[in-house]
Length: 210
Image 1 (cartoon, rainbow, N blue to C red):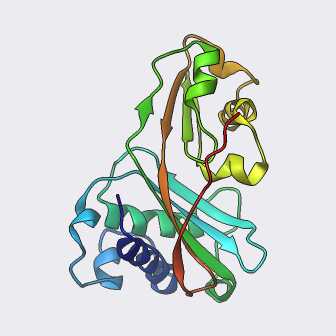
Image 2 (tube, rainbow, N blue to C red):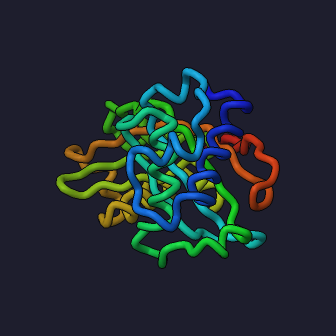
């Protein structure tokens, strides 16, 4: 678990990277430069995470990059994903420094991926909970990931969520039912600014059945 204090620091690191790192290429020294003070122990743990940038006040997506697998220590991962979300998300042009006054930052820290071993569709429908679980699907060379907040924001039920992860992977609806498909679930702790550089809180999602 990541505490609220640690979550606030996670968002602060991402904000510091955006404020001081957009006019340079990313390198491994950026985290130390923007936050030279020692970090709590959790920031040395390798964790999956995503950093999301949203416009303010509309909260439209402006960039999102993450590592579902625990490839980097949390602190380094936050710095990397913040910079990449602003500069390298292929869906958007790079964020310009003046835009930062109209962008809010969200950091999602993931639990380890849990493989759903039972491939019986009815069992999968019961095991996946909207508002609690995120999903990662891999089938052949195709893969896709959806964070736990996505089905809540879209108003999806569980079946729609599972078809949604297929679409994210570029696969037809129902591909999650195929025996060769690999499906993982995970949870995330979501920390979000209420305004650009403003108060950070833990975003609570309400699990729903069906």
